[in-house]
Image (cartoon, rainbow, N blue to C red; front, side, top):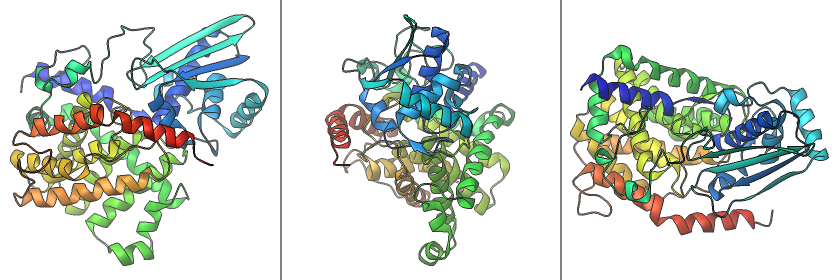
Length: 435
C-alpha cells in the first residue's frame, strides 16, 4: 500500500479514535456551552440550547461524569462554568465536587432552556446561545461531536450527502485530513495487515484507556453492574470461565462505568465511547487469553476500529441503528484475524454479523447499553467462530450479497434511511413516558 494512502488512513484513525470522558452527546453539548461562554466573555445569566432529536435522545438518561446526576442541565451548567473548549470531548475533566455544587446552584438560579431544533441540518446538531448584560455568545456544533461549523465550511464531513451515502465508499470524493480516505473492507484489511508496525502502534492507547475503565467498574459499583455480575460466582456458574465470558465481562464493565458517569476516560470511535469500548476490549481479551503476540493485537485493533469507521462513513454518526452493531462487527473482524483468519474469512464474519444484528434499535445512551454491548460481543464471537470454519450466511438470505461492501451498505441504508420513522417513534416514546 502506498505511503500516501497509509498516511491518510493513519490521519483518519487518529481523528476518529480519541479519548472521551462520559457519554459523547452530553459532553458535546457541554463543549458547545463552553465555547459559547468563552465567546460571551463572562458568566452567562441565561443559556438557550437547541438540539437535534438524536442528540436529545442520547443525552436524556446517561450519567454526567463526577456529578452523580443524569441529563443535560448539569452538563450544560458545568460546560458554561468550568468547561474548556480546547479539551474537546474531555471538556469536563477539571470537574470537582465543589464545581458540581456550584453548577447545581447555578441551575436553580439561572434559566437553562433546552428545546428541539426542528430544521436541524443533520442528526448531530447542537446550538447554544449564552446571554449576559445585553450581550450574546453563540456556538454551533454539527456533523461531528467536536466540529464547530461556524468556524469551518458547512459541508457535511462524515456520512456525506444522501447521494454520497448511496455511493460505494471507494468511489467517494476525497476530503482533507484523512476524512476521504477511499475505504473498502479490502483496503481496511490490507492497511491493518501490512502497514509498518511503528506507524500504527498509537492504537494501543485504546487498550490502555478502555481496560482502565473496565477495572474501575469491576472494583466499584456503576450502572447495572453487568460486568461485575458476570465475573462473580453467579455469572461464572452460568457462563463458566472462558474467553467468551471474559470478553462479555470486561466489555460490559467498561460500559457500566462510562454510562454511569465515571470520570475515567475511554477511547471512543467515530464520536462514541461505547463504540470505542466494543471495538477494543473483546479483541484485547481474546488476544490475551489466546496468547496472540503484541503485533497481532495491534493489527487486530486497527482492523476493528477502521472497520467500524468504514461502516459509520455511510451510516452517519447518529441514527436509529444501535452503534454496538457497528463496533461489534469491527471486533468480530479483529477476532477472526486473531484466530488466524484470511481476508475471505473476515468477509464471512461481517456477513454473519449483518445477518444477525441488522435493525437493533438505539433508544438513547443509558446504563442498559451494557446489555446491548454484550449482545454485540456475543454475536461477534459466534460470527468469528463460524467464519473461521468457512461458514457464513449466503447471498440467498436476507440482506446478504456476495460482495461484502454491498452487504455493509445494505446495513447502513437500513440504519440511515429505513429506520428514520423508527427514530422519531423512539423519541416520542422516550419523551412521553409516565415517569
